[in-house]
Image 1 (cartoon, protein in one colour):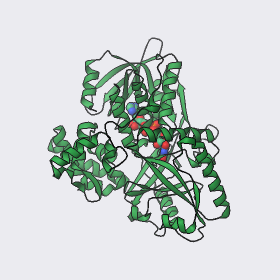
Image 2 (spheres, helix red, strand yellow):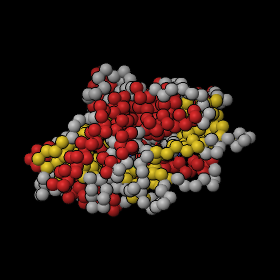
Image 3 (cartoon, helix red, strand yellow):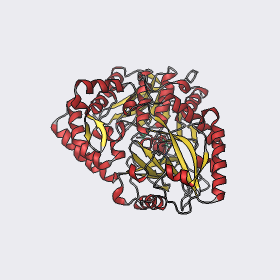
Image 4 (cartoon, protein in one colour):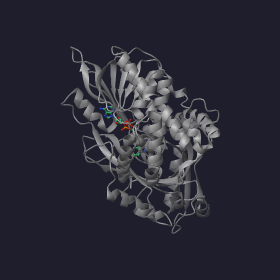
Length: 519
Ligand SMILES: Cc1cc2nc3c(=O)[nH]c(=O)nc-3n(C[C@H](O)[C@H](O)[C@H](O)COP(=O)(O)OP(=O)(O)OC[C@H]3O[C@@H](n4cnc5c(N)ncnc54)[C@H](O)[C@@H]3O)c2cc1C
């Protein structure tokens, strides 16, 4: 992945006609780009910021069918997602994990209903089940969750789901797309459409946000995969386009793993206001969330509301022996769900289906919104198939259900460096040759100089936030520690890319400002 060579290629081949241009480098856009490139279409993806900068780096990090959607009766969505869960675990073993969850139960009715419900969940997964669900008594529950409050506890219902690293999955999709001959560029914003004499979209206008240069790209088909920004893009096509998205904010907090102890996650199926709350071990910390707050405005950098943080702390405190307080929080992150607006009840987001929606405008803009990270592959397949059935591109068969995302790592399921896929070997070689590069940049986080150098050379970071937030997960795991690492990361980047000392200073300062949103 090399941003400059993608841009040079676009400049050198100004008149090239792409089969498919995808706007948006989150889960949906990157999945669509990989689907397209792997079918052999001439493919280009354009992302205005960094890959997964928006919602796709801020999820609960579950590869799941969605126990909650089962309770809401959306069985089709659950079955589809369970099937995709199995495919994602098989194709990206280096970024996915099998996670055990326990639902603590306090009444005989809860024991019955959750045990029966989760047996049904297993059944729906069929041969792609990740492990049987079953009831365990109070003592066994406390043995696995030693810091769970004991008062009134009857036992726990155990089940399994997948967990993953969302932004690293996004980078893996971009890398895989490029391996299959597609192109993907971050920091390239689509600013408008080019239309032919009949008013049909024939390309996009683009701004390279780093250099400020504008250029045009021609395409047979343009896909709008911009999540909560989809309505803005639709209005570029048609200023009168009606709103289709109802954004809903979901907040998580990250706590030290000592708050949970053990490897099991907790799932609280019904909190005081009817939401689900998870406390899940993730790398060496615990992610707790989430909320569901309808918003009117969308932003690339949403900020958690105080009441959302208080709600998570208060609810976690009801179940944990040591109730967490604000000072314990290592990171707070907020993400925006691109939910399809419900015309009957525009204010509500809780009951809005998490299913995706594909639409085709009269000028030929294909938009894909909603859905889940877990179902990105299926959403991508349907989007490209829709383009085929609309006659915009020729027919070719989807191959992503068997497409491995890890390249060249002989043992993708073990070791911390597995997250870099085939890059692991190179990182290990660097640290063998120069042991100094193997030292972590901050005692509170595992990331080493060798990893940062490898990322600079292979994963298209443009600024230190790209490295600290999404190539590594430093920001999300411990925001303060990530700010302390920032000067070293900026120094390494400036050596790799030849930036001036002033660049280092500016980067560190703007990163420290950004970190305030996460504390
Ligand atoms: C709190 C929360 C928890 C979640 N948890 C889970 C979970 O555990 N499991 C799960 O499966 N799903 C989960 N989801 C859902 C999942 O995260 C989303 O469905 C998915 O990330 C949406 O991806 P997307 O690509 O559609 O949108 P985004 O990730 O928002 O990507 C859209 C991209 O388009 C870009 N863009 C916008 N305008 C332009 C332009 N003009 N030019 C170029 N680019 C542009 C944006 O910069 C952005 O990067 C969760 C969602 C939230 C909010």
